[in-house]
Image (cartoon, rainbow, N blue to C red):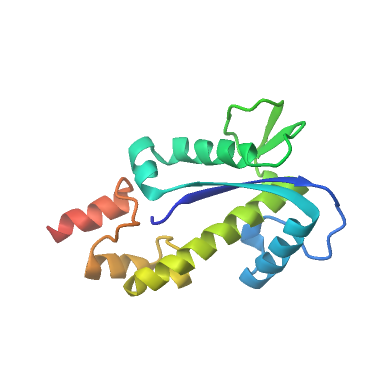
Length: 175
């Protein structure tokens, strides 16, 4: 409901990881941070970030595609083959395979999901410093009860995605 959409692209150079590399949602925050550091050491990484204003203009689906393409373009070397989590067809210069549930099936997709999640969480923690009344450091912009209450009490912040129905509904009721 708030903040950017972030995508990661990872070319793994060394598949021997000490840390658990898995779907980012299956790891603790500490586990993701440790895995993130090791991924950066053993991989080539690209990150794409699309801000909330752009998400509002082009929609979350198009913004996610754009973030994925940006992440791939930011890899220091072009990939031979792209694996994409989910069923989202994106434009790439290399062959592409979509894998539903890919972050649980592919090491490189799992690594990319960790990179994206850690990057986004860090952004939301910085936003928490600017807008402490929303609790972004705790819920990272997701639609928790705490977050919904903060929006009701304070209105939408500049980083809220105004095209998202809960934000539209909550802010419409305020006026």
